[in-house]
Length: 437
Image (cartoon, rainbow, N blue to C red; front, side, top):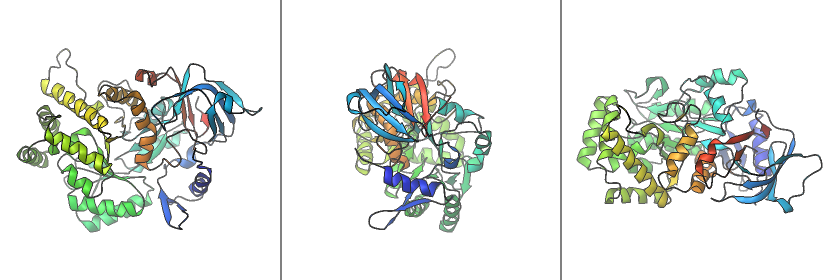
């Protein structure tokens, strides 16, 4: 197993010594940057020694669980991992019986919105989501939560998304109109210690490339909500990720239909609500355009965060919108085809406002929806942990259970590799080596 202790200690020393970008020198004396959660100084570091014994271990490295395993956690870090008979338990360790439980890395949410729902982040972390990326909200929006002293997930924030007038979401946007304003905005965001950059749909291709070129000099990923920009061209401009399955719609229909949708949206942003559903209703998800786009994503290794939850639709009572129903069915089938083709799927909850999810459980609901696409439970769990960590560029210290990594862990009753609904059975949550009450 890889040992991350040395590099993590180097990173940790920088974490707690300054507010600047985290950086370490590699063996070739080049500076490497690592995204950092804005609340890293506010998360208590555990000091105890724990032995989780006889547990079914999902380590995030594969898509299966290893029965009868033991994991030692010492001073906030994973110390030893192995089969029960292979790990010697120190006499002073506090022993946790793992019989009937699954141990896995804390969930990482690649697309979380706070939306000023007070105490929601605390509810989320207690439900197993130990890290979140909010792709489009001012850093100050979290001041209330951070001041409460309540446990919070690791907050990997992008700050406001970059958009061009007229903004789609004025309260969450930073307006840029040319390269000079992009440079000014990026300097501001770097100064806010953002861990990624988010661009929004009105930004033209030339400015998307300017954003990605600047962000990549800092080692920060760039992700985007598109819809009216051709997704292939945006990826060629440097995007690391694409948010929402609906961002792909215009690439899956004729140029004429895509342009009609694009012009309507540019004239009236609200037209996208019905327009994208009408577009997805008519998309042939098994046709040549869909196959070509899936191959493009696979070749470029671009992350796709579907966020199926916001688009889910069930006909019941007076809700009889067949367009919404068929559109969601096509989205689900398309994401299933992406998973079969090994497109890099990231998992994002979309936060508090998901139609059919119980408040605080939208992440588990998204995992359930992904299972309905045909994606295997193990693949969903790996996407929720190590793959999301890779997308956020924090896999050097989070996302898997390996020696030297930070101890963000979940104990779950049952085995979610067999039944994804067991993800609701959270028994214990460890954050930075400390069990949450």
